[in-house]
Amino acid sequence: MKIETFVGQLEVISSGNIFVPNSDTFRIKIEDLEFIFQFNDLSDDAISTEIIDDKMILKFGKALSDPAGKGIYQPWLLGTVEEHEIFIAFNIKTKTSKAGAVARLIEYCLYKGKEVINE
Image (cartoon, rainbow, N blue to C red; front, side, top):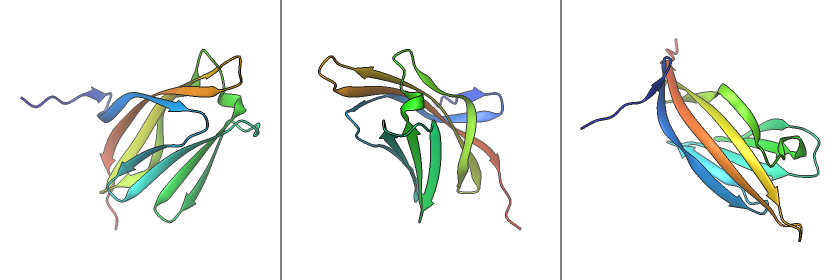
């Protein structure tokens, strides 16, 4: 039995919860394109991006550090993979222990959008 999930016109291709201890990175790889989530508690920026080769680095600053969670809740266009738009929505919950250790719970959903025709 094949099950497909959609939100509006977007097909859900992956969703889940990831526990990221300390300031480790979180990576998602779709075919040859890689998305790297980096955390920098010294930066005041919420989100900045950088593209290096086939890697998109999403850098999250302390503006997204909140025990209740902060994130992007509307599907956000990341790029194109195999001629389809790829979107992400996520929530990041940041917890800090009394000893200062930081851990994050990332709830995410990846979507495949419409086909992009290159002419």
